[in-house]
Length: 191
Image: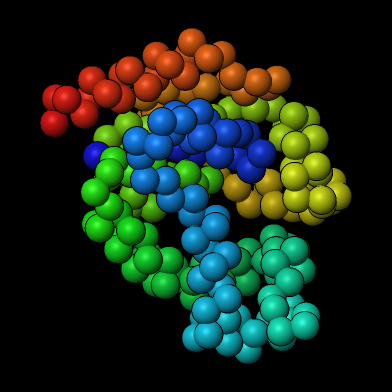
């Protein structure tokens, strides 16, 4: 079984994932973390450095600098996504196929991928721009300009595609999370 959790940057996807997985029943794939580890792998890292040499600092790719380059140029963003995608897709396929547990995939870009259609349960986490900005400034130590650039390259979500939509302005309703957990358990039993 595959559970997809998606939403804009700073909406609370990872928090929902942790709450749903409080008993460690699921194998969680945080795609951002997988992607960050991939861009430090030798072949992909060198490809990125060759295309964006200004992002190399002390032997590592400065992801904030890379992000600002990509967020401001859709053509470069598209080129970068094509470069990284084959590595990322192979890694995600392997992780999903080899998991002995139900998988939760936590990813802002989920609706743009084949994994969205593969999900048995789809959860959208939604928060206002102001709330997300506040969270991202604290979490990622970025300014408003960086956040807005990142956010405008995000995904537009169609609410009708989701089994659950969680509104997250100032925290979550524990009863709502428990209800979702029970629904997931029931769906697993039906399979």
